[in-house]
Length: 323
Image (cartoon, rainbow, N blue to C red; front, side):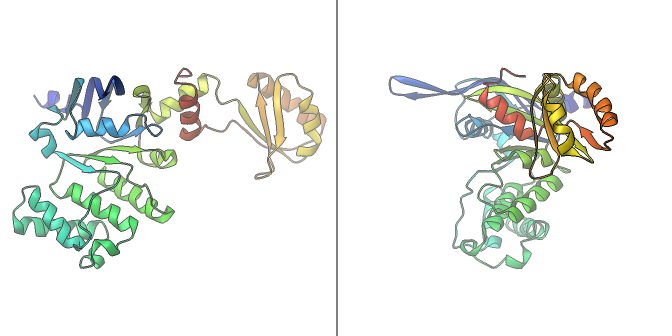
């Protein structure tokens, strides 16, 4: 029995579909997507209009499912039992701006079914954990964007959910605000699973182990970030080599003569040689002789790892046919 419970996904969808009827036309916003989310932090990525928010709205029960199925920890998405275990932060959280942070959280706690004293106690706990205690009696209208996002997260946590769903949690924040929210999410992930939608790929790399990429309502790829980078490398997408020697200017002309080199330049930011090679193995064989013949010292020779953003841009541009 315990084993079965452990195997239930945090979020599970099967052919999940949402079609909007626009008069004589139908818009398929989400097209038969399958998601299996394991415990931890799962990133949900896609360009604007890809279907991310529509998917989230079906998971939390805000809109109906056209066809297919979705479950949250084994409960049907949209059911009362599923909504009770979800904490949700929308992209633009709604607030009563004339309330203080403390008043708002206590109010939301009451809406969530907490008794008045329990709501007050939980509010104090969350204000402390999210660094809002000093501003507890300040009206929300006076809060910075980062503070508002933290109040939004606190409101999502007030009823002790089992899973947290965040839609663009760092949108409209400055770098410091973003960094603080990312740290908050990482801390929260030690207590509950987090499903986070974002278009800021560097942040997803900091928070998530596994991601699902969606475009035009369809899933392009879903896997761990580590595996996606590995697959991408094996597909020959990372054909950039960085070379740094004691005399970069001297050996560039000789490298340009090699027919397996497509492009070569010294990057103005790091002063290193950047090489695009059609045959990396041939390049690896040629470098030692080149260094010896020219009495040049090798300082660096490596193949940089593609960032998640590089891979995302390529996948979205090429409709997911690369991986």
